[in-house]
Length: 567
Image 1: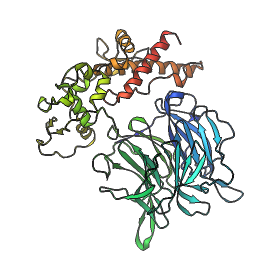
Image 2: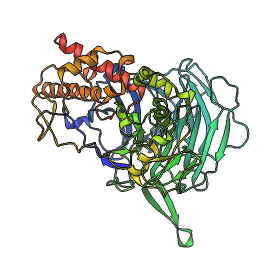
Image 3: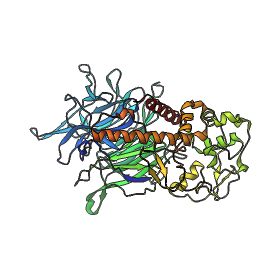
Image 4: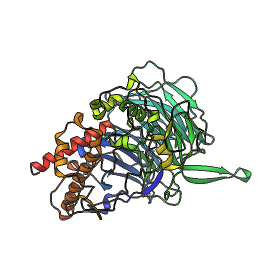
């Protein structure tokens, strides 16, 4: 994993970026249909001046830009330490508190609001008179479940009492229901965190009535079928578990639950407690035996903090924003790159790659994926299970079927190759970082000899890429090749076409981005954010899923069609 400071570009005005804050909400929304991009919606929080905020700021992930949509005045009151979750393109917001000067105390909320990111309108969810609903609270947790439902747990009520109740809200029927759970359950707490894993919810940490906690629980029985009764189950996992803490973040990405930061307390002489703010990263890894571990994290790390947000975006990207440490409230933004280790990618799991190679009957060929694997012929099988025609294997549609085939998992050896199961050499020590990742993916441990180092890339006037010292710029896809790609259907593409398709896509994205920025700075009415392509520009063919390739092709076809009709 690696930390990288997010250098935010704000073409419109620097004021578009959110001010420093803690106790805010930051929710990822798939807004490709409306705005052509994944977005991060930030609302509220506690400012540096110790007052609650009520603004909405939107981060467009591909362009690294902040914006402030035009909002109606009839939205929720300013607040901090509330909770939120997204259902489709709608962000639901619950609870939180506001300091009321006249009362010299906190006003806590139990209202529920919906922000529609398609038109940026607020809607206060009205309940039936005397309908059941959670008590007013702050520091609670909310997650979205399947079927358009929301789950709220814990927090502090108006008397500062720690809560352990669990409520479910049906966004279709606009009805709250308290979830009655028999058997054991977590102690009442606040400052904890929750996230959804498939049909279950994981909860970690927080502060209960006696101390900080580092217990991990799962809440099962939340499926729509109702066949399983809801139940809290404590999870005792091996490995290096995070110390007790509150005000931390936990985020599910791929097969990982990532816990970051927060505040812990060290007990010294005479039972005195010293608060320590954290910036550490722990992972609950669900690949193989489920366990806690503390991964190696490179790069300059953000300052220790609590009540920040770390939000999972597409393709294993995590973004950190805000938080505080008792002396300072932060407004910085950071990327935490999992470097592909946490991504669930059916095209690159060990067994899927080996199934595909086994089906081809040969380790090489014209397909880029096969070219870079360097699997020795001795491990290739020709089982009837993996016999597919060459056309099926070369087409992406056929590959999708092949990847679901069963094949023996191969064991990496010290030479960078693979041994058959049962004939593996002595296990090698775990390698750090990318080396370990390449082993997992079945990729060569070093760059293949035939893969020459890329020359430095320069940008031409039209935004396309050209390499220095090359007679013919290898990074530029020729016009005939682009025409051929856009005339293909998804089923007709081969693995050899993926690299060309991505290059053509990047060329179109760079040109469109350049036109957009020219329009922004000149004040002309140019390209709107929804028209921009580029959401897959940072991908390689190895990081794309099969479903992504189809979208890349569709985006490229749309862009070429728009150019042809002179948009």
